[in-house]
Structures are given as C-alpha cells and as structure tokens.
Amino acid sequence: MKTHFVRLFTALVLVFYFPISNAQEEYHAEIGIDGGISYYLGDANSKLFANPQMTYGFIYRQKFSPRFAAHLNLNTTRVTGSKLLSTGSTITFDNPVQAIDICGEFNFFNYEDKAYKPFSHKYSTFIFAGIGAMYYGYNGGNDFMFSYPFGVGFKMMLGKRFNLNLKWTHSLLLTDQLEGLKVLNNPANLNGFNIFNNDILSTLTVGLTFNIWKEKCNCLSY
Ligand SMILES: [Ca+2]
Ligand SMILES: [Ca+2]
Image (cartoon, rainbow, N blue to C red; front, side):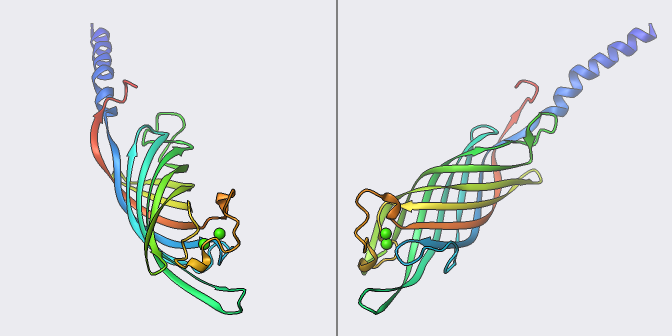
C-alpha cells in the first residue's frame, strides 16, 4: 500500500510539477539603442574603417522563431573625407546622413534560453539582409535614395530581459551621391551596369536591447 502511494505521489509530481517548472516567459520583440563607428567606401575612399565617424540609433527586432527575426534600424552619422581632383585641387566633404534599414535575420543557433533543447544557446552569430533608405545632404540641398543593407552580427542574452548585439552592416546606396558633392557623383562614369560602383556606408555597432511583448508558453507543447 505504501509503495503504491509513493508511486502515485511520484506520478502526480511528474505530471504537475514539470509543466509548471518548464512554463517560461517568451518575448516576441526587442527595442533598444546602438552606437559605434561608421565609414564610407566610394569615390574618395577605398579603405575599410578610414575616417571613422560616430553613429548611433534605435533598434526594433521582431522575433518569428529561434532562428528567424527581422530588425528595423534607424541610425544617424556623417560621411567625411577628401579627394584630389584631376584639376589638382583637393576637395573635402562632411555630409550628414540618416539611414533606415529593415532586414531579415537568420541565426546560426536557436537563440532561446532553453538549456534542455539541443542547439539552443543564449548567444548566436547571425546574418541579415534587406532594404533601406538614406537621407543625406547633396549639392546644397538634401536628397533621398534606397539602399541594400546586409551584414553579420552576434547576439547574446544578458539575463532574462536584455540582449547585447554586435553588428557590422554594409549599405549599398542605389546612387553615387553619398559624399554630398556633384563632382563625386559618378566621376569616372562607371555606374551604368555596375551598381557596386555606387557609394557604400558601413557601420560597426554595439547595441543593447530590451525584451518586450511577453507571452507565456507551455514549453512542453512544442
Ligand atoms: Ca560618390
Ligand atoms: Ca562611384
């Protein structure tokens, strides 16, 4: 009789305790800020990380699954440099740029805090690509053009609510105007077929995001 009671008690504990203990909070989105450096590649510069400028901005990330997410990134920075022209004179520029990107993300690991599931990690490298736009000074006024952002990153959970993000982004502008000067807009007349002759804005940033949009999950039901 005592043995039956112990078995029954153990079974009840297994049935009721484990679903409760494994019911975790899941968050569907993140908001946060990022900051770091930017540099430009184009008609006046071909070196990575030349003339680095400060950049900072806002991030929103929507999580679809442990592997897939999408982020919205707003960043502000400047594009600076100088160029020796064929006339013998040197021209300098310092152009303010606002950028917005919307990218899909793929995580190389399952980014979730579930130690009992294989391939789940509290960190992951990820790749992303999408579409964006930039608003910048051009020829005494302002102009706007779409871009193709893409890059690599690393994300890591900091406790239950925060995430650290490292991101290296390259945004190919669909025009050659990023320096803000007409003389550096397609100066070699090479932009006809090769979109990669357009200007590129790159950023290397560290971000801190906060988990929002909580939903209880029964983690035994996956
Ligand atoms: Ca250019
Ligand atoms: Ca160019």
